[in-house]
Image (cartoon, rainbow, N blue to C red):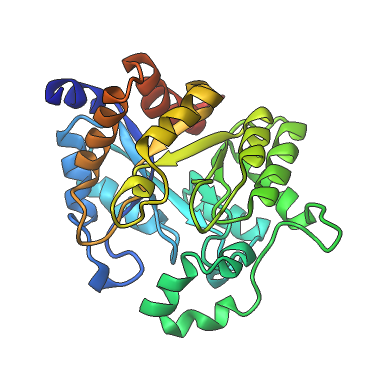
Length: 298
């Protein structure tokens, strides 16, 4: 089994990783940015997306690429209030700086704030940012329709051929984004960990987003003791229900208690196999789908 999980890790691509520092230095990480890139390369991964809830990662990835070759590290931006919110102009500027993946708001989304989700962590470690959480962001207007800004963010992502994730928006908001993405032919939308407290999507919302062509993300973080929000068996049930062609598996781990991200991914892929997921389906969700989301049409 250990040998099989090692083989499954080779060529995998993690669409949701956090580096160091993330949120606050005291949270720590198993490895810093350069060490993580070197270790992922050593373990044979194809690459990963480097995400930060606070700042865009284009500059960090630029320096990682200068020091570590042979591994693809993808820079990203999260459209939180701190850096301009749901603003197509902000995304366009990020793309000019090399951004290849974007995410709708996380801790400044109205949904996260209402659910007391990840915004709790921000308030604890970065209380000075409370001012950015006074008015939560949404992609829907008062009538329940997508705002022009949200539609334009999808349009910009489509024109630039970059990955776009739904962040900590509500299930209803994510469905609205998925419908708009389907309408304009955008095929790179990822429904971010719908099982999390920060999102709280319903079964019907997950199914509808997938029907519209969105990829559904299932993270290792949600199964770990620190979160315990979903069981591995339930994730496997969802994969069977949706079909692996509609899913991606990621780690989304951070904090001092975690193993290095490549080891976490290896554990995740091995666990899926132990629970009956075929090696072909595991590779589809951890190799083929993630790379297609980043590179389709290029």
